[in-house]
Amino acid sequence: MRSFTGIAVARMAPGDDEMHSRLSTYLHPLAGRPLVWHTLTALRSLDPPSGRLWLAAGMEMNADLLGEVMADFAVFSAAAAGDSLAAPPLSGPVLLVDAAAPAAAPILRLLIEEPEGTAVPAPDGRVAAALVRGEDAREILESGGGMDDLAARVALRFLDPHPAVTIVSDRRTLAFASRQIRDRTVERLMAGGVTFLLPETVLVDVDVRVGRDTIIYPGVVIEGSTTVGEETVIGPACRIIDSWIGSGVELKGWNFISRSSVRNRAILEPYVRRGFD
Image (tube, rainbow, N blue to C red):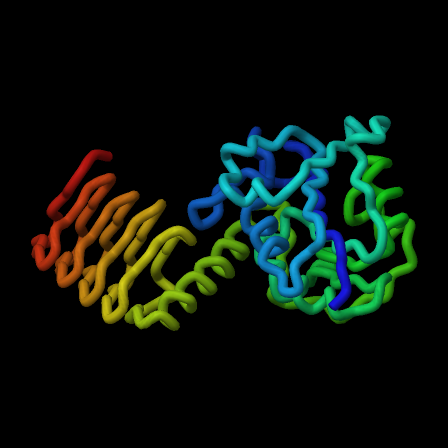
């Protein structure tokens, strides 16, 4: 089992992409978390684990927005490249991933088994992730470069483009990444015993918890840190935000529940609202 360093590269500033937003690409919300949170979580979850984790940021990242995942990451900023204390001590293999690739987990698991100098492109040809030598990664990072600079300066062996990997740079790719994360979240819940009658029509945030034998109808949106109990029925077109829904509950449909609780075995008629907008 070899040791490696994992680095998420976040070099785009607002205006460097096609999002037409004042908000950084990496901080756009995706399934209830900032986009970069998903990339960092993918790096953190690798098995074997990384010996050290870094976020190479071209701008200040608000650790409070990124939550508990940042406890495992140190931040390396291009602005501090002249400071030897700020530069990561890179040696051995380094796994670099574009921080705007929130669904990159499958290629990261693939790359840690490959020799150094191997990269995986996204379908649009951009480098999504690469396993390189420590000195090559350090040179790119200290110059303030990103994944495209890596491809220009380092001889890479490219694997086939991975169809599941999207580098978010506009609203279209953001929507595609949202579907990828939604599908993985729904699949995880279904593996735990939850029934989705039409899973492609729902939106479920990554922090949502749902008990077994619960049935979720089409058009349902469940957001934030919501918990739904066992053997509950969530009827069509319900929206639930940061709430606790008990076991044996029936929401008959078109219900809006925000920052509220619904007791066990309660029945809510259609269009009943709970909580505040």
